Length: 453
Image (cartoon, rainbow, N blue to C red; front, side, top):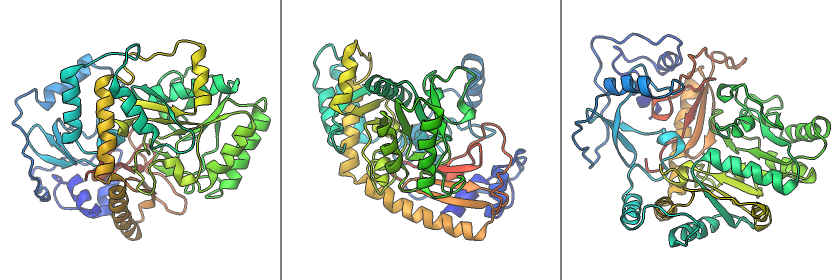
């Protein structure tokens, strides 16, 4: 599997390189020139869907208009970016009708497959009846969705707030934590990502995403990375560092602690086993609230559990989610306890589009599809196979330093020296993921495929 993916990535460049050569080419700071005689692409497996003929704007024109009318901070993949015009389940189609296996999943968002008929139908039927109303009126869709989502949560996590993105969800969670605890200081992990707003940039522990603005009472503690962390897989040592940071770097009281159990943007780093249990205890003793960021790892993507935090045997006080919750719809949520939720009643808390009828109908359809089609078990099965193949490649090729993760949230870290764990030199914002074998900033590859594939 992985070798065929590498062949696809190197198609059109003359002879077929070895996997190591292909990987080095992918992470090279100078891409290899295109060859005059492209090699035929590998044959794709049969698929019954036929894309509609495309008569819209071509890729070259779109790129020119993007540069002219959209912000310069936007980036794209490949020297010649793909013009994706259609999707069906695990496949995407370009303007020429060429089919691609989508292992990126819309940046870890497509949880049920592109244009899944059940979800499309739910959105269409609701749109025909009522496209928009807000929570100042009653509507059945939002409460049906909230009830179904709450049923997936452990403990007393039963109150749902709907928003439009993961960034919004983490902003709201931070606000709740500070109001409930009465403390401003927040702790977050280095290498974590929690959004791009003025507030969540502070929580984010990756300089690539951080503008030089005030962070606002944020403390970044050591990342419990089993591969690169200072203490390896020693969760107790990392937990002691958090306790010392609170004791010596704060007043001794904190508002909250937020962490992804699987750091997605940071390279699919799974936290050291047992880490969250110890840290949650420390944070709660310091008056803080524990927040699990499930924006990428939630909804069964890890295969072993429905929620990433369950792999650490903990129950957070607040859980944030987005991406896979809507299968591509602009949808996010915060789930917490009735006690914490009550602090929001001090003032008016309102979100114009959060939980609107169309997104709620689509989100409920997503939950039903995940259950009906056993997507979590599918992630476990396919992920196990993929890990086996990747580890087999790792035994053959020194450039593969680490294979990690669970289900369809996997990482492959590329190195030039396994002993020193030296990272290849990369171009800024260079990223290829999943079916193309990826290098993400620090040569951390990320596999976050659609669970339909």
